[in-house]
Image (cartoon, rainbow, N blue to C red):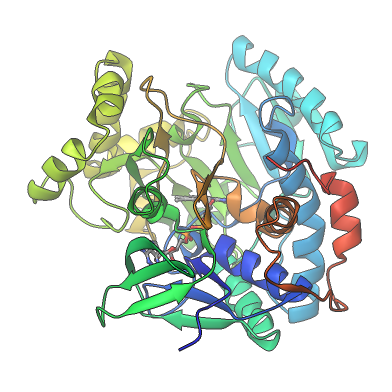
Length: 442
Ligand SMILES: Cc1cc2nc3c(=O)[nH]c(=O)nc-3n(C[C@H](O)[C@H](O)[C@H](O)COP(=O)(O)OP(=O)(O)OC[C@H]3O[C@@H](n4cnc5c(N)ncnc54)[C@H](O)[C@@H]3O)c2cc1C
């Protein structure tokens, strides 16, 4: 069979968005290989479901993510309206519990402006005003981001898959990739289920929790390793739903590990949940269990490069935080206690059942540091996106458009015929202007 011109590995929201834009801009044989029977079965279908406005992203450190999130809010809004998908602009209160956190809110006000949010979209509220608006929420002050929105990212990804298919993309679900070897025409890809080999001229790795393994299989990104943290939620009984009308997030206690503090969440269907925590687990699909079975843990620890993890584990704060996170998985009371810091009226009996857990996969560098930004690693006939974490679902359409532009600028898409098709919902040129591309080739 003819080789694929471009193969995208991973049918999450990122891989699906990349496939959509590739086919919208180019003609060629484009395939998405997804190991699960459907798209968005992992992080993209198991997250908090919030369109995050970029008020909390430092534009100097998280410039691309901040821009992508800022623009994608408008893209998803139009997309949801066009497809009739859930869109609930519930808004988020980011609450400060002490003076240090109050100062962080001032910083966030600056970020919101620098990241292009309209002054009418956010507001600083003092403790007294909060007591009037949300009497059950205890805080010194809060920043209200009025347009944070509850959505269903799995529904977005499925709809986008249909659009990509209409443009000619083939989604091969149930097709896991086990190996990547250089071949005369490009790459030979080993397939898990059939043990067949697929051939491709070019590969784009968008494999989420499997991204590091895929990059290592292709012989790149060898200086990085990863960790997996399961984020668990508790569903709140309907009787307690009015404890807060909007999302309530607290300023992260550990700026380096912003995903540690659980929130009060309003889901797109109106139900309330608290979560997620961040429990270390042994793999990207370890949705159950903690320490047992031991085998996968041992394998995970000794996976090369071991040195990165050894350095991280020498960090006593990291180890004690991880143990506490594991405790929050075992103890419902511990999860409750964390949220009671800002919502003291919440009771143990309000936490009625576990929600759908999702797994984050942060990358660890050779200094033992958890990397904050997405990492882009070019390889022979390939390009890999690693560490594509929150707010990755929010920013996916703009991030993917920028990626396609970047690959074109590198000459990696020269084997495809440039053929921009008219778009009904999204405007490539407007996204390009807002994201600041065509960008420099790297
Ligand atoms: C608990 C949690 C809460 C979050 N909350 C939010 C939020 O509210 N808002 C927000 O914007 N972001 C949020 N995020 C982040 C967001 O969900 C992710 O950034 C985004 O979904 C990543 O998309 P992805 O396509 O890169 O990864 P994924 O959705 O994980 O997709 C990767 C795909 O690759 C497939 N794959 C992996 N390896 C292989 C292989 N070898 N062969 C074939 N297929 C393979 C997997 O099966 C998977 O389907 C959250 C994440 C988590 C975990």
